[in-house]
Length: 249
Image 1 (cartoon, rainbow, N blue to C red):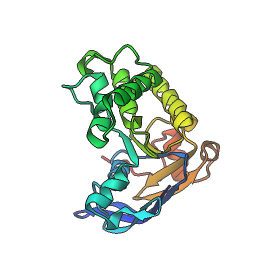
Image 2 (image 1 turned 180 degrees about the horizontal axis):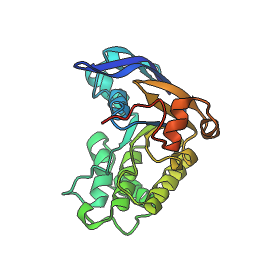
Image 3 (image 1 turned 135 degrees about the vertical axis):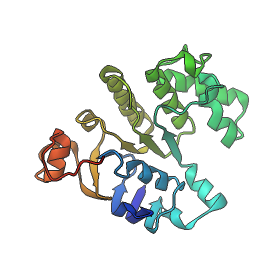
């Protein structure tokens, strides 16, 4: 579904991505972990074509999005749903209207069809009674649920999650992780999650990939990660201060 080949990106003198390679198969959910400021969010921006690489390829179902523009790029973007940090909801729209927004903007779906799909989405994320509320009237955890419903409303083939539990307490974070697992099983999308939630994210993702110094230094199922002999992986997973990883200040 996604193949990233030798991706390189520099901002001024700073190398952010340095020959990154990663594959995500159809229906696979991959978590990318790594230090804050290490390029994870930059990677997501490359995947939806907001940022262009200095070198490398990004193949989405075989289409290299680094070489397309305009309508061709838009057609690839239609395959994506995105759950942004802290939800990124429209404050002036109700929960219902936030979820309906992509259907109204991107499709010619009839009003009754939009209504039916939005109501189903609200049920899927456990917010069936919250459609008339505004973002300011609901909790942080509920906002993430709305954001997930909005990302899934067009039934995308790929969903990107940019730190979906940032700022939430452990109990609410766990509920969001379980919801991601539930919706992934139901819709079967390919997904990439940027996360710092270790070890909780190990229970969500099919595979873990660690980004360090601009490249993926190790990837594999969660259990393999827990037993990794790589000193960088071991230090990051354990949260130890001592080790080969330099702290980014």
